[in-house]
Image 1: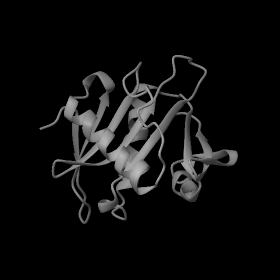
Image 2 (image 1 turned 180 degrees about the vertical axis):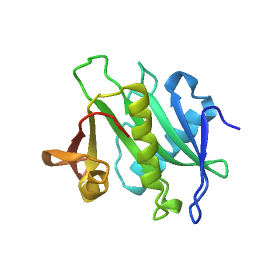
Image 3 (image 1 turned 90 degrees about the vertical axis):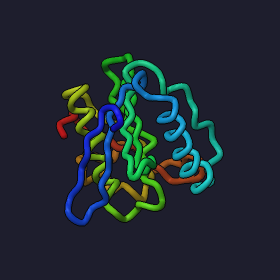
Image 4 (image 1 turned 120 degrees about the horizontal axis):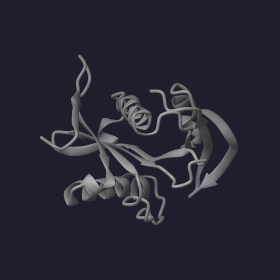
Length: 167
């Protein structure tokens, strides 16, 4: 069984093995799976050619939320903690693989991500740059818009924030 695994299964839902890992605990194969899923979704599927490997994956107190199904990474989010205590914790690279979209895996992923934030940085504000069409999804988790809609790699986005990390 993988390190840091929490299994969540509910009647009618796909069984997912969840990991909440500090970057130093990522294995080479886990990091490869993360980069592969991010490239598949963001670069290939969404046609956003950008430098995904941005230097933030393996620094500081940053964490990674990984959701595995049958040995395949199917859900992922990255949590960035700035060295500046005045800066919010940033949630990004939120992904559910195309094969499992519609199975409410995004809700499980955000629940896991917010629980990690609450555990590691209680009372820290959160920020994420959401694809604009997902604004109502993130609003269900207490996020409110804090920017106008802006273009990021050809996709409309909106900055959203949430006070405190209580899950």
